[in-house]
Image 1 (cartoon, rainbow, N blue to C red):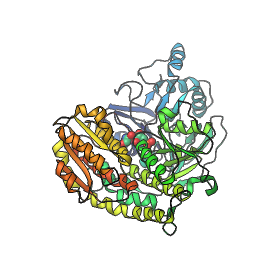
Image 2 (cartoon, rainbow, N blue to C red):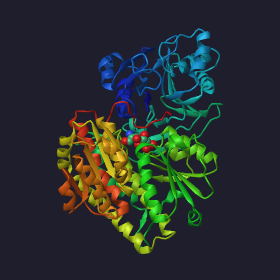
Image 3 (cartoon, protein in one colour):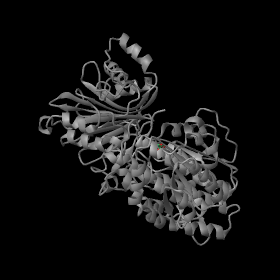
Image 4 (cartoon, rainbow, N blue to C red):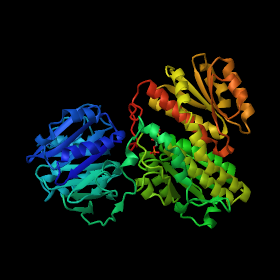
Length: 611
Ligand code: AGP
């Protein structure tokens, strides 16, 4: 949510920060801006709309050759997406500028105090108060860093913030609480970003700031301390992936690339974590001896959006395979409802980005209640990865498309490994465990088979692309897949879509069905197949346009469907890993055929770091 970058070194800063900003555009894209020191003066450029608009408005690099700059791409929270509200924001003198990711909660109160002191505000943002607060403290404090420290002590809320000042032209100041900041270490140059993907092209050596830390970043050095000026040592981390992981390559969109990566990413999630001989799995980051894991009586899975849907699948498969009750909850609800967490409960937070504000707050709430909280995350070094008591990385690689695809199947793979591990400690036999492991190993190949139907799925998408509504149905472990299919369609194609348990449909949504309504139903061969088939007959009788996801060879279902996508057979608990792939492709093609911006859908941002 909002991307921020900074550069200080010997090179021309402007092209570097603009290029870096483009890699963060998935975090927000309603306006953008940059500030740099050019000929000793602070120059600021802002534009409403995407970064390309800002880029077009910039002077030639030769006319703007400063070697320190900050930049920002915005996802609006306070104040509309206008040029005035775009960052950077300036103090009264126009000599100091900041970019900010997060929310300042007590901004009204601070604004009133600053107005009384004579400060003039031009935007409707919460951010603008921070730059004026720093300006105010700059009058009494010995250094820019001290002024920032004092200002941040007065601010309530979350921030990842970078400060530039024409009066301190040898340094940028970065400070963090609740919103990520990474410092990239180069040769006689340093980078600041809210996400390592922005700077990995320049350096793989990074440090991740922790909350309430401030970093003075100079061309040839960086100094980290807390808000009380106590120095903090950080180990330098080495980023273990390179730029090709965040380029589209031959694909038209990141989302399509990420859908096609799934045979590899699912494999990466289970590789090294399975033991075929005794039919079990190991998840190193669980940090719990087997004797403790055997005592678990309940599991809470907490997440938002697509990660929540992965959690719902986790409930079905953990309860079935390990016979442990699982409660799945939206993080935004869990954090405020004073959850009951009995002893012997293991709490998992699931988050691709590891930065989702509600999930992070739910993690803190569960920890405050004394629970052991484990993270299932993708982004290494993210807040959730660092604050949880342990956990597992899904190893899906950078996910850039705002619509999550490969992270979902990797999360489900990890939850499957968890179900096998806990199941084997309880009622699951060696042979059953071995069956799951062997079948899991076949999943990447089966996903390849489904991806080979891409053209067919595009032609189905063509036939429904002008719909205004769609209903997704699934039952048992495939019900959350229906929810996920509906979410994918609505977030990128703007078609209203709902996911429902197949049998629940007759209690209300059936009223919506007519001959114009596409009904996408997952009806793979499983113990409930006959019941789902009957539900779909009811749909057909109301003349809906039935699109079914069926197991290969199911001619019975094909006979009542307008279109059928056949997927390979697998064990019931592994069905979601296959059934979701055609739904991802269907949503992608519908959105693309409607001419929409698939990777950056309106109003959304990749990681929601505000409440
Ligand atoms: C999915 O396509 C979304 N754009 C969104 O629902 C996302 O899954 C949600 O915001 C949670 O994100 P996280 O996994 O990074 O915590």
